[in-house]
Length: 483
Image (cartoon, rainbow, N blue to C red; front, top):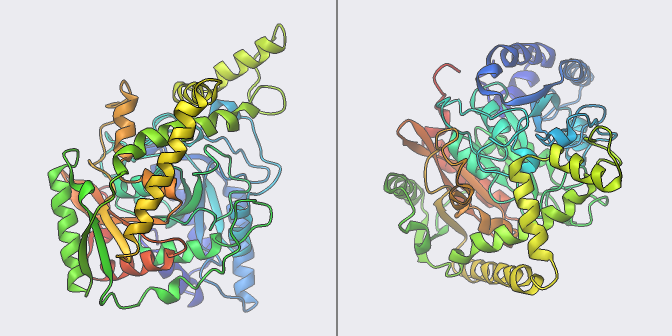
């Protein structure tokens, strides 16, 4: 049962081959047995899961149907879930039980999904390795000495280890696509505003976007269908019709114009990954796609711009965690200033503290124009590059990451080295574009991903291309040894 995709589970439930309750019990037992190796879960919600599974079986017995009805998933632990710990991977929120469900959680629950638990993550989604969690580092099922990527590493590791078929995740600078690449999954960052951020604890509000992590493009289409849509509670949610993503998977790729930016193949890219990307391009050409060389000249400025904008927004968003209303509070504060200082100093880990300090500096008097305003101007240039490119091509293709997953702890002493691993993913967040990573092969036994980017609200196009690619390759079917 644990090897089934979401689509296969939907067919099995519809054909009454097994019940949601039976499947849920199998996966809960599997998580209990195997997760200590990879540390992908912060909280297991057995009681809730069995209750939801029984309810889903009852709905099917009454004639209801739906691809997500009775499907087991998990939520990244920054989606608020009513009455259940929502920690953001931080000591700061270790004792926080959300009083309401995030819109993504309530939408998926209404569709009939079964929540198995909350997955581990970089603290407040700040990181590229899932090593900064208060609950310990997540390990990559493909090699337990390596990172699974971040910040959605818990969701990625759990799906890769076949502990469940799919999970929710979030992407601020590549945090869905990079873990997908490192763990041989398909991960989709939707257009900014496509998925509601209400109840999703904020890191950088103009960059954060929720999306699905699964083994196949077909499964991502199914999960995104349940997540996407306008939400009046979220002022950044866009009132745009949601197409039937699954129905669009089988379109022909004949004549599809794929742009390949020359900037993606510079000195920082592992040549073995470059070879695998070229192999992916050849596969898509066989399916009728036309390849065109393009340029994204301002890509080189994206990392410094991102690492000004994201920490600036983080310093503002995280100011609410002050030991007064909720979250960690220091013992016996002498006065209000002592309460603030010690509660934040004890509650936040070093990476979060680093980014808050950088952000506060960039927003401070005398430095705002020099750093934050300039970064926003670069952001516009990055977006303009994409708009120019999409006048000539339908999608843009390249590597998801410059290197395969690194060893646990290898970049802890040099945060900038980890930041540079986001070079191909952050531009989509700066521009608000949809992006997808899909499996493209292996280097030294570690998975490699190919990234696809599309114009606004063209998630269906990305899923179509990935699905057709996966019908003609088998990378996505490979399973890590021991899982």
